[in-house]
Length: 345
Image (cartoon, rainbow, N blue to C red):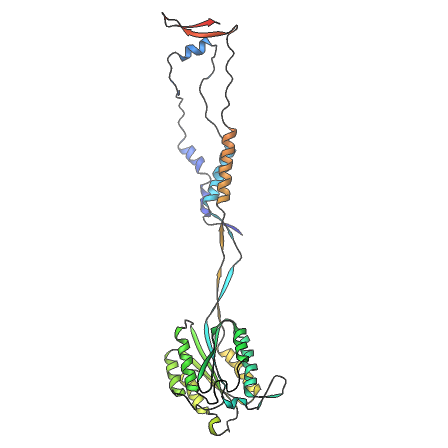
């Protein structure tokens, strides 16, 4: 699309006419050369015409076109390109996944209904959840004996899903260091500039090896405006180290302004992540920019070429000299009287 950055310049189109009307040019003839006897030379050669030399005079239509082209260049014509859009993430979302030994219990089903271990079901459900988080920066932390960063914050959701699929039970150790995983998540958010910061933590057991209790880590997260949602999966009746500590997970969610969810099967797990997707609405800030290409050089070049062509066409033609006196003659000054004489050759 063609546009002008300074369209008001075209209001100056009638300025030459206004100036000519308000301040007309003064007409006065002034000879370029003063010679006291020049008129006698002209008379002696029989030349009675105007001996002045006229300068080039550009036709009015050319002058009008040159003026309009100059105004067009001053108006700064621009070609606006197609808009270039950049999507800016408005939320940093950290997924914290438990990889302790209890995640290998086969009490869940996959999408086709076949029995699978808990981690396999989590991979399917969380993978579907990731596909809906367009516009967020998503990170992944896995934990067992210790927490590990699997994926730093990124907008490449496909990469995050791929690295989630590559996780395995016990790859971080058999125990459950849930509090330390929250602590690592808080550290990852230190350089975050996103308006919203959220942790979704999933575990199927109680904390058995953290240096920082989960509730204490959650209070630190709340002080740094980080929301934590907790998802408990598995059998609440489990005993021993694999016991599901619902109370601790509820305390973590309450301390960090989040919600607690309990998933006893794959259907409930899928429903929970659907609710989380609605709670933590994915918003995208779109920054649009339309590149502009200046075109002022085209009317400027056209005005220059037109002025050169018009000036060249209006150059004064050399007038032919008047015919010499019959029989040939030459002009001379009499040595005594200093009068001009026409002498025959």
